[in-house]
Length: 329
Image (cartoon, rainbow, N blue to C red; front, side, top):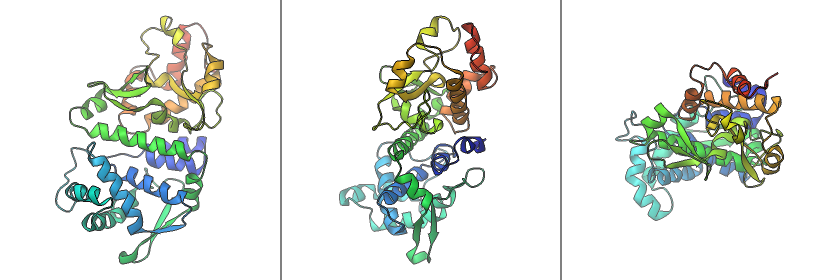
């Protein structure tokens, strides 16, 4: 369960990743909230008026609505529903460069009642809280906690933002007509030349492999296990079982998500075509187990790989056995 993910690295960063990467999604509100919280905390603010937090929250959703659905087709968005108001007010809000009064009021009403109640919930509460809402309804204040300030000011902050954006893109695509059902049923594919995740129907790029999976390995290089920050460190996507093994391993796709892991480029160059170490394979198994605890469609992608093959450790052992060596101690 998600307890194992936090136990591997019991930090505020892991709690943040639990909230962003592993909760169920029928709307994208938590991504807009997460983005707004990181922005406010990065400015060093200890608290912020709800109406001030609602401005970037509402505008992010307006911008994303122009590109893709922000709710599952099973969700009815009409009347006073926030997304219905956002669609109605989008054009004028974009023209103004800020939410209209109607949109701002709708955001201030819906945020405490919906997304801010649910952000920390994940089959129980995530171990760290990132904000508290205080004050009367007319002048609510959002108190930003120490764990949020720690996350927003850390060296991993750029990676956390990229992970959030990637998850938002994946969830949007799962809501899209004609594509979402394919993602949920068939998972995703990988375009190796660009290292982008695509849907299997239209081969439309969704997000980068690194951004999509690095959070599930705690923002660390799979090879050396040290922090890996895209945009700061040079990043490569490693074939954990080397690509050269493809002729020796039957019925297993070595170019699929399960075998691809972000790593420091120098680590990847030194590893080259050597077989993975037991430590690397343990980290790969734990990363894949974490993805399996997230919602569709990455989960589905890995489920299809594992079909009829046991758990990740057994699967990895079997792959290694095909080339004649024992890979997990």
